[in-house]
Image (cartoon, rainbow over all chains, first blue to last red; front, side, top):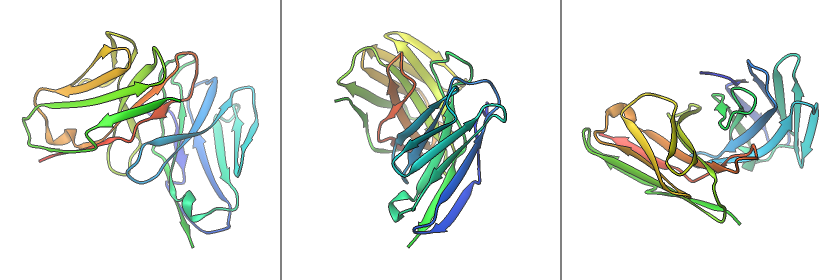
Length: 112
Length: 112
């Protein structure tokens, strides 16, 4: 079943610009995670934000969480060509679950 | 540090042939283990997960099976492959008390 839905499905920007991706989910969660996947590779964990947090930073990444709207956003500032990848949000389907449900992802292309 | 291995990296198999994909984790004990499948350009579908030796939870009924013969070994099998089994298979692990999952490099399976 689909839990996270990313928006947009694809995003193409110029190097140096900021990229924003959004994720909506359906059930109450205790955390939400963002992952990156380079083409043909495994996923890499980027950042986790807990339900009692509203914003979290890691380097050029900024994640926000709005539990009232059941949505999260991932902002990548000062994008680089190496940021070209697919980005997925993931949430547990219920609190305490030992598994994650991933969205369909946003494919980000950074043009030099 | 922990590492996760998957093999083979790529596999081309005829319809009706058996399948065995292996995943091993090093540097940790009693991890949760996961098998995902990813269709081209899509999100991840959880197939199986295991919270301990011999404990397998199946998420999607299909002609695949999973086994965990050792603490850090997770095997995905099929007796007879279907064309629809083609895809990118990813193994992941996490600590039971943590949320973040860590992914292997994946196996690209093409059923012909």
